[in-house]
Length: 195
Image 1 (tube, rainbow, N blue to C red):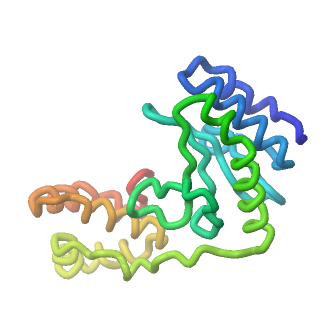
Image 2: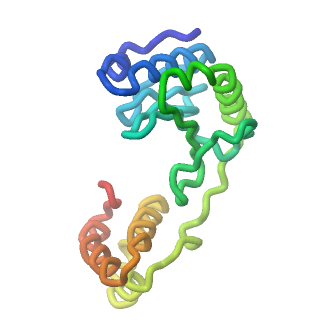
């Protein structure tokens, strides 16, 4: 069993509905020999400096999130794709500490598989930015404003995809137009949607 990282203790000490489930998940992950770190404000478990799995919670459930979950063997059909746009990670969700306790042997198998995937060097084949839907409202702006097109093309592929997903997730053209207008200044500054 690897040691607990004191920088992460505060997460497990918080009084949340998932406190007991978090403690059980932590014990399982440390028992698999992973290194415990704090990333994105949550416990993240790494192998050889590479992210393998993290613990996080939501209103309705807490979860283990496997960074390369799409490459794992889903022996028990319990890996969940968070949203349709998530390409790599997969979750195992829990609604109680008792559920974590019942599944601990299965969870160890999944964690061991995630570690094996990471050690193998396998990489997820992500969709390229040009494979994402280009909303007409944004394409019109790109065609009319060459400086916007240049600024958008200068963004990292991840930032480009973030904007494209944000724009195209709106059902109405008016909403898409409004989103594009609001984001133009950030794009021109070279910033991503959440920067």
